[in-house]
Image (cartoon, rainbow, N blue to C red; front, side):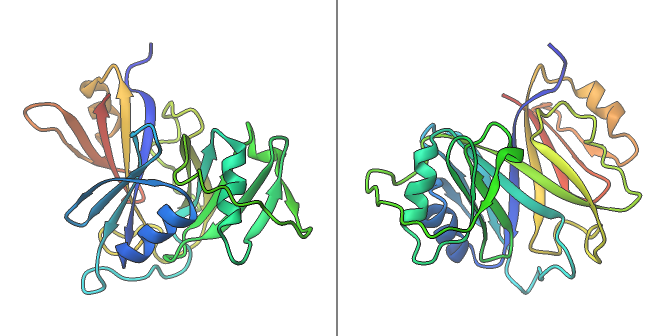
Length: 241
């Protein structure tokens, strides 16, 4: 087994109003609230595992992104395709629909302007736009998604390379080139992707120190976690599962 092999990557999104965004991620997308602590809300599925974190950061400290966001898109892959239809049945107005080998998918914007794709395909390349009129039967039994995994698409400025591009992450990170005023801004200043938490097996701190020596890092005496930043100022947290 490779050291620091990624089991799960948990994105943290800074948001202006957590309550509004909580309604979106819970009611619209079927994520389950797991833990609410201070400014943070942990979201997951029925397994009880944390998959996404919302961090409320009011406008007195944080602002809207100028141009495109560091977060290009969240890609949520659900285990049960029928649950995608159950989510669509709740909506008064349908978002952009897609169809693949396993069923329907959809793309929707959060209240903070973050793009989210919900699907059940083995490969999102199998998805095609679906523009026909369709009605989805309501399924009251589906309150929260049974199981899902999140992949994160990240905008990087041209000529900037992420320190994570060679990290073994099982395609959970996708990097896209872009141009935007805030793509390199400090992660505390904008409502955007602010942190990626890596849960890894065979935690090896010396190898992480070597990899991130160019940007600096912090390791507590307990060595329970490793904290650093990527070249675009997204905070990176590594811990052993």
